Length: 206
Image 1: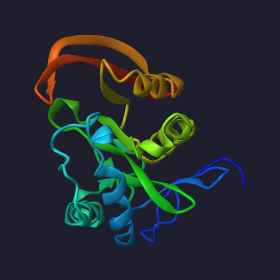
Image 2: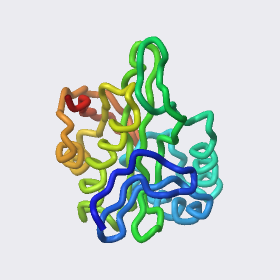
Image 3: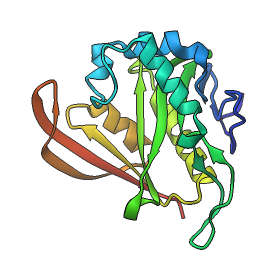
């Protein structure tokens, strides 16, 4: 199978990205609830995430997330963007399951900003720890960025933030073309420990 970054989603969980070896990014399904809860109910994974993600992570939490992703009120208009008319295309989901052989083992998505930052989004992702160190996210993230640029003309920039101690996530971003733009000391407090955050950015290809 060729490396593919599709331009649209269909609402039926068809992949937006597919790679050899069973790697894919597709829409969340209700059948993913058990797998999502199993992989995210892991403190090693949660320690790298923001506290807004519930922990322990139950199947009810996972089901709530799938419902959120399916709610069209949380989708974003796609297509060409103009200052006069806004985005011209259909609303698309922005948060997806990372799958291996169609099992949901992680997540990847965009959080679109508002106010004066409305032409930007923040990328977020996580992966079950049994798949760490195997290049999964390094392979998928560049293609997800291609999909984002192709589908959301409104975007001119995508941001990311990592804990300074999470060097692996920074390497994933670097391989996808993100540039380290700054360090904010004493910026985060996770598990009662105050630490620094690294700020990353990726501009729309010209």
